Length: 155
Ligand code: FES
Image (cartoon, rainbow, N blue to C red):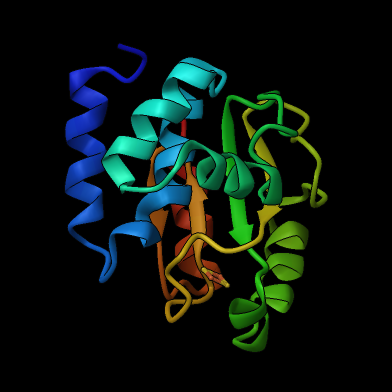
């Protein structure tokens, strides 16, 4: 088993917060990646069972996302969604402003190695921009003050 029972329970609990099962796939991919440092073919097979999708469909989502192209460098990976819906709701401006405020360029890592700031295209919750993924947690409908507080609290 590639995905632990604990992680499976977390994914299931998170899926219950989404209107459709498939909406939870990208967050689940991040959780698996965060826990294992990779998404192997066994994990793809298990995710295909959880999400009632074929392994090829799971791999297609992986290829479209930045997950595999994001080796963990900072202690905390922070991603802001810049998918179409979120961009229309100001996510691009939010990400630029957040980058300026915390002094980390998009795609870069802070001098202390604590935070890596990046972007992602669609987490599946397209009505809640700006939206930020931090480790295993998602934060929705953010403003800059909230985002800064969340990042400051990271160890
Ligand atoms: S476009 Fe941002 S969550 Fe879908």
